[in-house]
Amino acid sequence: MTLKEFYKKAIQTGIDNDPRGKKIITEELEDIKKTYNEMKDKEKEYFDLESLENPYPDTAIHYNNTENALKSIMVGIDIEGSELMIAKTLKTNGRLIDAVIGHHPEGIAFAKLHGVIKMQADILALYGVPINIAEGLIEPRIKEVQRRLMPSNHFRTVDAAKLLDIPLMNVHTPADNMVVTYLQSRFNNDKPYKLGDIIELLMELPEYKDGRKNGFGPEIILGSKDRKAGNIFVDMTGGTSGSKDIFQTLAASKINTIVGMHIGDEHRKEAEKYQINYVIAGHISSDNLGMNLLLDNVLVKENIDIIECSGFRRFKR
Ligand SMILES: [Zn+2]
Image 1 (cartoon, protein in one colour):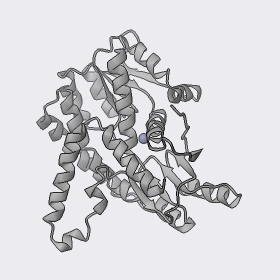
Image 2 (cartoon, protein in one colour):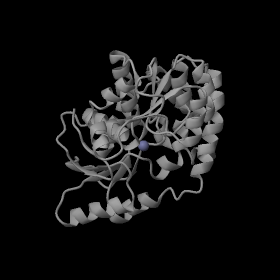
Image 3 (cartoon, helix red, strand yellow):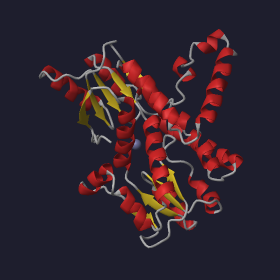
């Protein structure tokens, strides 16, 4: 499996496990194709051709120098110059590393991260939030995140990979889709009765056990272990946190408990106002679960060594 094949399979696995369902994605890709075909040549110059087939702008190959099959990859949650220097040092010492694969976006995927947030509206619509309200609330949030990303030096890590001649890609939303679809179906099947039962279910998974051992295990942020869980919504994909103004609408929907990766203080205060239960599963442990489930799918039948770095822990299913 080459890096390009790895990338294509990761995208396809992300689509197959997208909580919105395939129909919406197919429609969106057709929309993008139509927009592209109607563009003037001058506009086409700035069009990212990958977006015709990859619905996740926060996932990309940033640098590649080989068509050879991968034998060994270094995987981490955040890849920066330091991780690439570690890879270079290990290579110099005789360790085989064909590519470095990160989770959080770099380069063009970082600059376009806000492009995936709109999927949150479609997901909320599946839980009974009217699509007009979901889209109305998410649009200003997308602009806010876009403004927040503007001052960043997006290509710093990508430039390091080029200089060190180390193939680099990152896979973000496809992995986050894996964790959402997996946990949501576990909760739908097992129907945890109380918030304490949600924690117990999470603690069956090695990623959350590892988190607890190392000081960042799952926590009930709003509510208590004896409160009833009711309908659970796993909110872990779509780039970054959504709008803090959504909780009033959620209070009127069928959602009683949110299980998320993390929550900012402004969001927490809003959720508290509307009596929403909130369980934080843990950021890096949830990122690890998503990456592990993705790797299980992408690497099935493949014999590729994985070197863990930057907070990534490989647990095979
Ligand atoms: Zn993350």
